[in-house]
Length: 314
Image 1 (cartoon, rainbow, N blue to C red):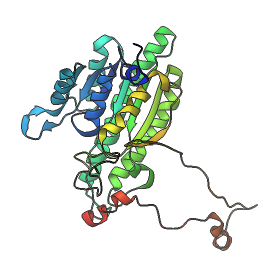
Image 2: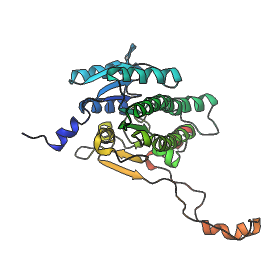
Image 3: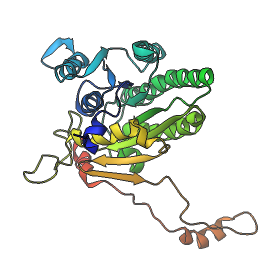
Image 4: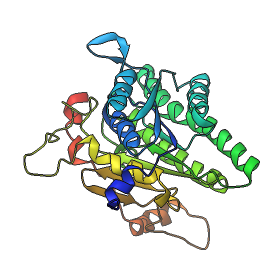
């Protein structure tokens, strides 16, 4: 009997090697299991420990789950916020069969507080995990892909998927560090898409919504409703990750997508919406008269699902 499209997609990554960072729980764990089900050998990266057993790594538990399902995986406990950790992780993946095919950067933390109250340590911690934790694996993987492409004279057909957030698009109240880091991830991804295109590498960013240890008890209205699509189930994100890593997405790069439940939403980058111009440089009086032509105002969109942050961090 011929395979159904679903069955074909399940095995679309056979023979490939994938990395998922921050994969010890939540979205990353779901992504690692999904890539393994699609046939990839997955290097599961996380420095975290199991809550009920501080001596055990959460990455090891996810690997055990993948192996129990008949998949192929191994754990990595490197600290990817450092150059050494990024190098160790990518080297481990390349050692499997000589090549890395997919890099999914997912590691992240939150330290929510308003700008007025935020400490330097809270700012630095979030920037380090998100931005350093994305850059170092991408940096090492990019070197590997460029060398492979130069050696063979052929594109490598590899993919990067980074994890941003709608906070990075709109800016969430009480999350200046997180919002800034997530916006930076989008810019980093777009640069990677441009710089690595000649080597055959795609780079896209997702803004996922999911019920994870980071959102449970914080974001209201994320509990599943019987009979309805569970928009906050991390498993809803997995098919899109597998698709972006697969052969049918080779022409998709430099994009950002909001992904949740049964929804994939492509987001447009910043674009001009209004302009004022004159024959000479502006003066204050002229600007005061013309500024209304620009439109807009001081209010900004606040995502409804994050409004509760105001009460929690004030």
